[in-house]
Image 1 (cartoon, rainbow, N blue to C red):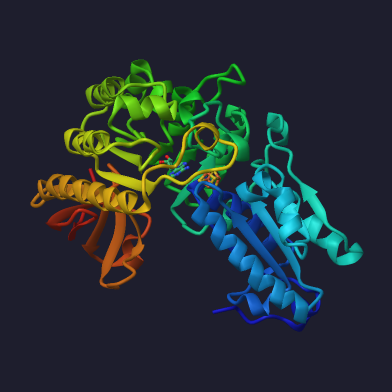
Image 2 (image 1 turned 60 degrees about the horizontal axis):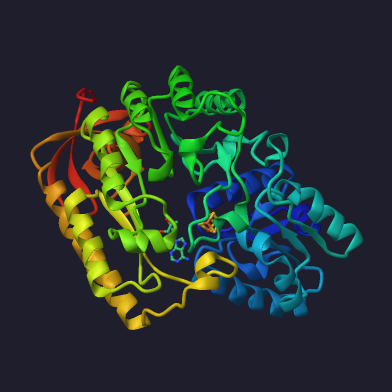
Length: 458
Ligand code: 5AD
Ligand code: SF4
């Protein structure tokens, strides 16, 4: 429900309707924007029709994500015909990639802010309300001191005990399918002391678990010449109150055995890694320009398993990449079984403008085959995960209690150390924010169910 608004807020034109697409980093960018808006007296409303300002935090990773934005922009155009004072802003990856197209196809858009330029949003809205016109800002790779992450309102996060922290932006690889180098530019890291200070401020505000974000997080710090990811983890682990650290996304090409060794040596770093494989066949990986082989991928997983006991691995896969044969796809299915991922996200290949694949490789796998492979790979993943999860019935796991389960208020929900989703009988009011032990009674591919066992957190 939209909170009650004061007449002054209504008169000031500060009702905002905002929606977000895309990855975790984009969600966090939206959180930074929401914090800035709240600080300056803007109020979120739940229906676009009630808003004075419409903001779309966009994603470009697949065409479908952009289609949804075009459709919302269509709705906003109709609304603006009735209320010409409405301000419409497009933020994030699509703003960065398609600024000119947006202005041409949707001339009612007043504000376009790219992936590093969105922290001016409040001042820009004020300028637009006072002076009209249109504001476009899309600097793609700003120097570290102009990254949009500093000065975060730590109180604006949605989850009281867990927080995400962006530590680097952009990606220096050029995977053939991927739009990210075009939307988020080159790798730029935040200075380590600034990140650790943010962790300290979050911990002071009740956060127990921090997840560091970067498109290619294993190269964190390389551009600054300071300590990399291991140093970031080691220093953050010393912050009082921080019990758990995670990080994503890891790519096989920048992971080293030493990094895994140092990860395994910090007790606060949780035994979980997201390492997208994308395909289980060398020829597809070569066409994707992933620069590793399946054997090298498995070697990296081997390092992780050697140095981080019990580590769980999750992955991303693209099915129907140009030229993917049935036999190549079968190799991906086999990899899922062989590695035993805890979870995999599976995507049907979507042509993205300007990428190497869009320019050189025909999108020749029929939609029907993409759909079928998508289902088959998810089935393989579910079978694998269900088997792994079943082996936990009767065991104890440790969870950080996030709050009551959405569907059953007598249960609490949390994640265990390996990032497995757990529901357990227990009193959320008393346990929220605590690490507790759970005895597992049931399992499925996607979650564990059990009972909180007091005093057995470790
Ligand atoms: N088509 C389909 N999936 C894609 N991904 C990235 N680009 C594309 C694309 N063009 C997937 C990859 C990546 C995840 C975030 O999105 O699997 O790891
Ligand atoms: Fe989407 Fe990629 Fe941008 Fe995230 S970085 S919002 S996944 S295009």
